[in-house]
Length: 561
Ligand code: GLY
Image (tube, rainbow, N blue to C red):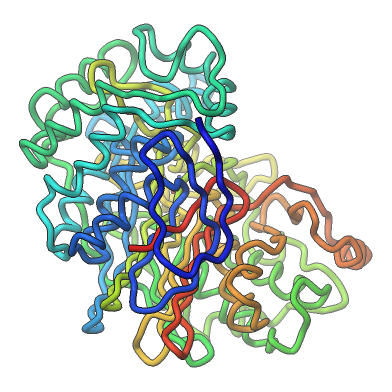
C-alpha cells in the first residue's frame, strides 16, 4: 500500500490504480464530461467508468450505489433504502422512492414495554429494527432511465467485493469501534470482524457479498427478493426477534413520485417529496429566509445565522406535526410550502430575541435521529442529472450481517415515531403522522436535490446527516445562491443546525465565535459539534463549466469520465 493521495483541482479525468491505492480527489473543474461525486473514491470511479463506457447519469448512479454497498458498508447498501431525484436533459423530472417499509407484522406499539416506555434498543439494533430493504428494487426501477444492461453496472461492485480493496484510516477506525456490536448481533463469522485491529491499507474482501451480487446479476430482482438471498435474510430474522417474511420481500414495491418543486430567486429547486421531509423543509426554510432578503447579510454573520436558525425552527416544528408516508396520511405539502402559510408562520420572527420553540409548535419529545447515510451527485456529458441519498440509518444499520449473503441490514424502523400519541413530560402529544403501520414508509430527512437555472441543471447536491441533512443542504444552496460563495466554500465552510427541539443550536467546529456569542446574548443556546454532513455538490456555471466538490469532512471523492 498504499498511498492516499489528496488531489485538488484536477482539470481532466483521473483514473486510479486498482483497489490498493485510494486516490481521493476533492475538487474538479471540467467541461463536456460527466462527473460522479460520492463518499468513496472507488465508488465514484465505478460510476465514472460506466459514463466512459457509454452509460448515462442513471447508469452511473446505479453502478456507484452497488459499489458503495461494497466499499462503504457503514451506509452504502443493498440492505437499506434511498431516494433518487432525476432531471433528464429533455427537462423530464422524476423521483424514485425506494425507502424501506414496515413489515406486515409490524404494529404501532411494537417497541413499547409493558409500562408503555419505548425500548429504543429494539428499534435501533438487531433484527427487530430492520425495515424491508428497498435499494435493489430502486436500482432496477432506475434502469428504466439508464442505457446499459444491469449485469454490466453491477460488475465493478462484484470485482471490488471479490478481489477486495484497501480500506482507509476512517474506515479502519469505524470497523474497530463497531467490533463489539458486530459480535453482539452476529454469532457467525463475517468479513467485518477479525482478531487483530483493522488498520489503514488492510484489504477488505467480501466473498459472500460478491456471491449475492452475482445472484442479482443473474436473476435480477428475484436474485435479491426471492430465492437464496431472500431465504438467507429470513433465516437471519429467525435467529432472534426479526419479523420480516418471504412475502414481505416478494411484495416490496418502489414508488415513483412527482418531484417537489418550487421557485427560489429565479431558480427551480427540484427535491424529494414525502415520505422524505427533506424537500418540504428545504422549501419552507428557503422561502422563510427569503422574506428577510438573506443576501443582504454576510455569510455566517449574526443576522444571517439568526434568520436561518429561525427558519429551521419553524420548519422542523411542522415536520414533527404533519409529516409521514403520504400513502397513509393526509398530505398537506402544498399548504405547508405556500407563501400564504409561511408568511404567517414568519410573523413572530424578531431580530431582538430568539423565538421560544414552544411558540412555533406543540412541544413533543423527539427521538434522536442517526446521522449515517450517504449521498451521490452525478451529471453526464449530455446534461442528465441524478441526486441519490441512500441509507442503512445508523452506522452499519442494525449491525446485523445476513449470514451467507454478506450484507448489512438497515435499522430504519427507528425513523418511525416509536411512541406517538403518548403525552410527554409537557403533556403534549405528536408524531401520529409517522406512527408505525404495516407496509408504511418511515419519515426520512434525506434531501437529494437538483437546482435548475433556465430549466437546466445548475446544482446537484445532497448530504448524509439524519435531521441535519435538510439544514446542510439548505445552507449549501444559500451559500452558493445568496452569498455567492464558490462551490468549495459552499460545501466546506462551517455549518450549523437547529431542529426546533432540542432548543439548542449546534455549531460545527471552526464556526465564527463572535457570531455564536452574539447569538447567545439574544437568547440562543449553543452547542459545539465535530462535523455536520458530508455534502457532495456539482455546480454548472453559466459558461457550462462543471465544478464538482467532494466534502472535505471525509474520504469523499470526485471522479471524471
Ligand atoms: N435514516 C435517515 C433518514 O432517512 O433521514
